[in-house]
Image 1 (cartoon, rainbow, N blue to C red):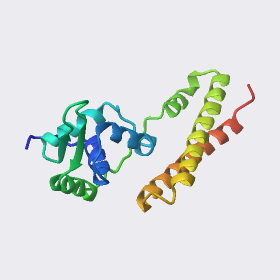
Image 2: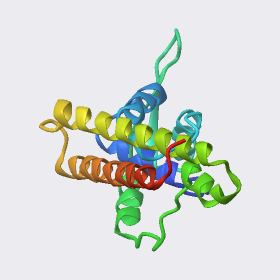
Image 3: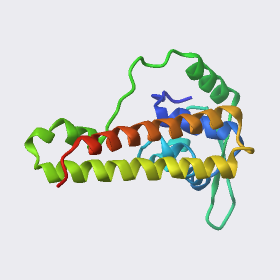
Length: 177
């Protein structure tokens, strides 16, 4: 088993494979409609990470003979143990937030009033649209996803509605442009 530094993407792949075998393309599709809504990363990692996990003995790989030689990955007992250990480990006390709107707001003292107003309008709209999308997902899949996926989705809705409300309040406090 090769030495493998585990990253959040490693655990993301192990978590998805815990639900069943998948190709890298299938992993990418699953992420696009679920985790990708709250966890951003380069999707190219989904094509590379399963092979690294296979080298580490955490997943098995089956390659189709001939044709495209599609590779299907399955989590191993060692992979399940690594995922369980990660889930049991303490989570960092701090959540990293990388919000371009918040960064612009921090430096807004250097901006024109109309630009601050446009920022607030755009951010309110963006967070409203994201919350609306989460609510559509909740309505479409709420009965077919597990309790913890549902709770993650509910937190996403609350978060986006709270941030939308912040930008709406800020907009109300700004002078008309």
